[in-house]
Image: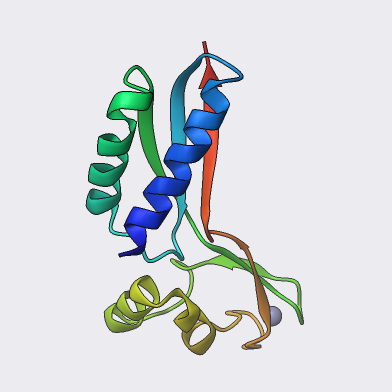
Length: 127
Ligand SMILES: [Zn+2]
């Protein structure tokens, strides 16, 4: 269960920042190309923060994946890629599968970079 590890990392980050500033809210931004069960993550994180940061509000947001073709420079999103339901599902559970299914919609090159939508980012709102 990597949700536990992610919740722990977020909780540690919140704690460290609480020492420096009065944090009112934390925005947790989860990349679309990240295999995370949001309900499970929420549950763990709320449990971990209950004692250390009871007054901090947590918001969750999903960041859309954005790709950029290395050959023609075109940028597009997962929604622009014509993928089947099954392929989308595969990418959700195994984000690395994106390399197998996604191609540049303009020139069909499989050589692209992922500009956004990967990993977890935190934004702190201070009082
Ligand atoms: Zn291209």
